[in-house]
Amino acid sequence: MRAICLRAPKDIMIKEVQYPKRKQDEVLVKVKSVGICGSDVGAYMGVNPLVTYPRIIGHEIAGELLEIPEGEKNLRSGDRIIIEPYIYCGKCYPCSINRTNCCENLKVLGVHIDGGFTEYFSHNRKLVHKIPKNIPWEQSPMIEPLVIALHSLNRIKLKKDEHVAIAGAGPIGILIAQAAMYKGAVPILIDFIKERLHLATKLGVEYICNLKEQNPVGMIKDITKGRMAEAVIEASGSSAAIRSSIDYVSYAGRIAFVGWPKEGTLMPTALFTKKELDIRGSRNGGPEFPESIKLIAEGKVNVKALITKTVTMEKLPEALIQQSEHPDNFMKITAII
Ligand SMILES: [Zn+2]
Ligand SMILES: [Zn+2]
Image (tube, rainbow, N blue to C red; front, side, top):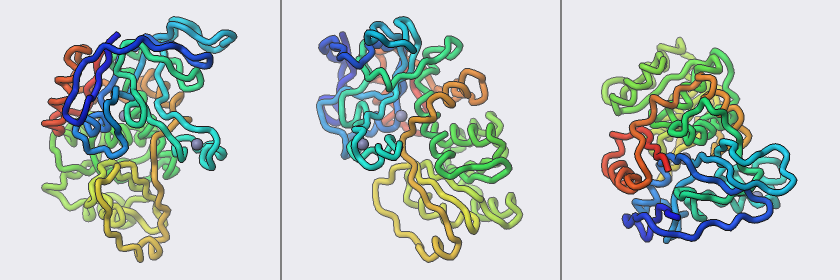
């Protein structure tokens, strides 16, 4: 069978690999569709220090079950599933309090261990979720990024009618905005790429701020009648946006950091105390899979609009290279395997 492999940074190829051997507690999956994530592009570019090479990439993986463990009651061969790609140890402190998404020994598919840009994949039976037929294969990989978005909303406990300023209108930022609207909150989406903000507007986001033309602090002040945003989610990983989140947030407000910055950020920490902020990291997800599947299946979140194009497995390496060269031109690329 074939797999998409990085031999080294900027050296991507389709390689013949061994058909997986299913272990006792695993399901064997015929991979049907995958999504290219920013972290796959980072692995290709060689800018993700967690990635070791050679590496089969990919963690946004949907498919059909071929084999299931004996005695398995909830799954059947032929079921459509999405993979939960965060493999936790089950022994450390975060695992012991059901925060397996930030396990101390977390292994993410395609980063620390080989991923799922392959034709067949064997995976722990507990880390698959059934998906309904009405989510087309090319959209199914989007379940995973929506999990990340929902997790960030859970981390800041976003409530109805609250304002949430979102820095970064990439796939995660726009998914956060859509999920926030579904929950009855008011997103204010901030970016400097016009096309991305335009897409958000088409998806119903009322307040967008183009950093090239508008001052986000003044805008948030107007929209919130002086209060500022009760919640802020940083989904760009830019140091400037991380710093600005402190200016966007209200007194007694909450901030979640989702983006992965490449460097440290100098922060006016006195404002944390003065505003009595709740500042939280937000990483991966897990318990949000069922909700993510439901929101997409019921059409509450539009993931189709975020898919720039869908390619074949043969064209996947080329598509990934294109995305690495022109990141602003692509929201999400999916592939049918
Ligand atoms: Zn991803
Ligand atoms: Zn653990």
